[in-house]
Length: 576
Image 1: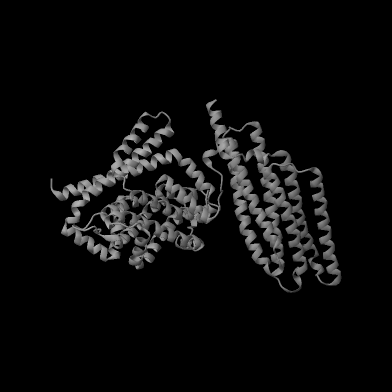
Image 2: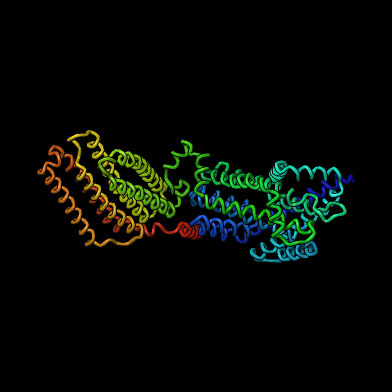
């Protein structure tokens, strides 16, 4: 067989074994620990640093940055994770993926076949799935190194090829060309780990008659940088057809690696010297695989530190690059939790309805807090904000009503579930009523403030309405918290709240008449102001009625049982 053909076959065959081993190891590890890894990602993302740590840990365990990247994009697409959290996980995945290069740098060629044999025996004879996955992981680990060994032995003749040495020399002297080579290699192979493994094997070939690497660390680093850019294709492909935030997460991955390359490309030689200084000493061909691994780790650590500090900037960049489309803006104003596929699963459907009702409740809480901050000079601005939120809340309320109607029409509700479903709609109607009155108040104030001159409500009158709204917002917030927790509200507490609201109404009317008597307010505004106070009282009464009804008719605490528990109950019912 022609020597060149033999080298090509050996190289692609070794690469195939490596890729198969890598994929098998990643799949086996995901099956053995995938759910736990998802839990780690979900739990450790409260701040960017924890997100980075979780991304690095999961990738190091699963040996696949692609798996971690796809998980993060899936989470953010489903709304289970916010954009900064997902981006921090991507940063961590870049660190975790350097573990593969560090493993490859170990010289374990004498133990490859015994590792493959042990893994095969465990996977073959094991009865328990977990043990079988562990065996498959060991077997795949051995195959990974067998592929590396095959590529390494195939590449040895290349070191004596004058054509090849000259070609490599050009790449080593032109960093930009090295980046392009690394990028193209990774785009073709679809695995940065594989291309870095090939690079480590190439670099481990000595110039004939010496112990010097055929390419050297300074020549290998640009190719390594290109590999890092090429690996972003996985995130881009995973984000296709996903939400805007999923695409932004993929964009952040691209920006991370491209920006790093643009920085490091100017300091290749100093960086190579630094890596050589901190890596174990020895003949270059014996230590260059470790040097490349350390350069890979150093690059990703440095860029992760920089971008974790600047994560807010990264979020702004990707938001600017990928703004929301009109369709997505409309979708963003839709239900967060309602799922049409769950209509025939009443327990789960009611759980989602309760979450959506509480979502409506949160919108109205924001509206009341906005109203509490109203003043004469901000009346129009506050009303515009409230009007937008009211439109959203009203739309959402209608969609919840339609959804519950569809659940009833499915005919799967028990009598108790039907009662609870009706109860949630009564709660929603009170929330809707409060939202309507809140917007009416801001509209009345804004309308009276734009006319100017003596027809305006006095600054003191507007401030008092804002103060009253703040007290009601506090009451409403406590009531919604109580509804969500499932606690009963005592009749005495409700009676006390009613008395407090009546006293507040009387005080506000008395203060207005006192201002009229002093000439501080125009008497012609008394009817308008009293109508305004009536709307304030309606909000307070609606809050009390909401608390009274919800505590006696709807058990939100039970309906808000964890969805996984609900699904388990559904599965058990199905089995019966």
